[in-house]
Length: 589
Image (cartoon, rainbow, N blue to C red; front, side):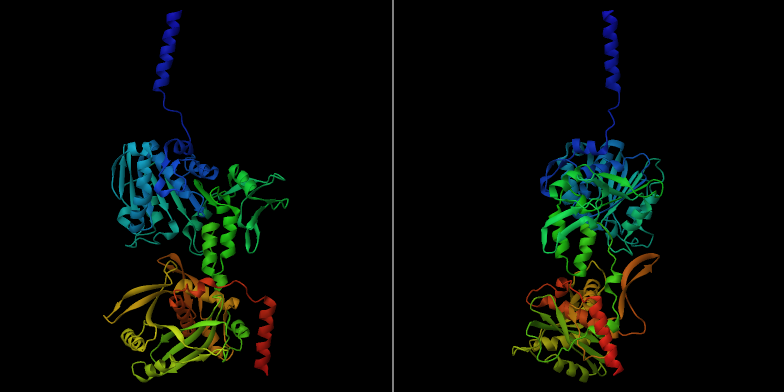
């Protein structure tokens, strides 16, 4: 009997030895095997995933998941979650992986600063990867290739099992050869494998054009639900639950909309530690979409989020908060549309002697074939407000000398202030898009007189810097590139709110021109893009001059562009109505 028992025990031990290792969740594997390097992490050492991170990572391994869409804010540990999924795939299921980043430069910095240090710090990955270079990591049973969203050859080709596109809203709308959207090209490569996964991740941008937002709508729309410690109601953490007194973000609380209880930071952390991602829609089969904001994060706090909301004054800053704090697309169009009648109603007497609070003046100049237009803008010492002092149209053939001599005299104009100062334009920006060489020579003449004058070229793109040095123009002087899209957005909002004051001595045509452009969605090769659109029957030189004058302020004494500091106080509806009625009364008289 004893020998039989021994044989059975030995046989059982053999079976246990041959049995596959127990299946564990990807999040468990990641915590057991990944080590965060010190050089690229605030919390280096063995990985410990937060509750929300675990649920995001494990969603990728659900049997029915074919696409995982992550529309998130910053500060929730999205990158660590992606690395957990990638690491589990490399050391587990294997197969060819493709990781798409926005461009080649982004790939280089990501590999050097993030991916390679992670592989080096994690024994499981270090042992699995057999060959490594800037764009390819090979391992037993597969490889991880890195690709630019602009390079179609890198996105199409052999079949893959896992496709990951990070920062989708920063990626190319279409590849450089016009073959199609990067995400569509990657989808085609996934069809060969019965079990494949496409992962799309990004913070969103504009509501009208955000591709991560559009893909989120396709899925089951999972939100992070938490339970109130007072009434036990379960609800998602949304931005409207953040409450704080303006100017006092340190006192921020999380509102329970069921019972009215206000949770402090300690309560929020306990709630977040037990929270759960739940579907709120049916969605397309196989598409799991997750939205999470910074209020769901164990790496941030109520006070930090409230401080960012409280300090966001300009439209550009508000967009950043909406995208990066709350992980939501920004709806800009309704914020920046102006009505010429409303602007006229808000106009004020602005005349000499000018307000003593003025700190400095700038001037924006637009050149046409038969005229030059110049606008003088005053910037307040507080940096919160500015005023249009005058807009002057100089008529004449700009291929001749006279109108340029007139502009030369105009730029020496002196504006007397209430405290006796004689104010002149500190910096002048002249648009060089028309008659470039003539403008360049005029700018050189102004510099010879000691005036700070620059030739500028406006460029579209919401990711551009406000002012950046450009190339030399015909060997004469170096121009400046003005990223007009964000400046236009801030200027249009400031006109609407009254933080850019307009003078009542200018005619109706001037106010028509200030309102001539609006944000619109344009479809380029079938893909949406948010861009500025001019009304076809209205000139826009007054608006362009104002944009240049605001941009020029960034060069005065090293200041940030005042458009970035626009305060949020605006006229009430009643005040607007009263001014509009006053305007109509004056017209009738």
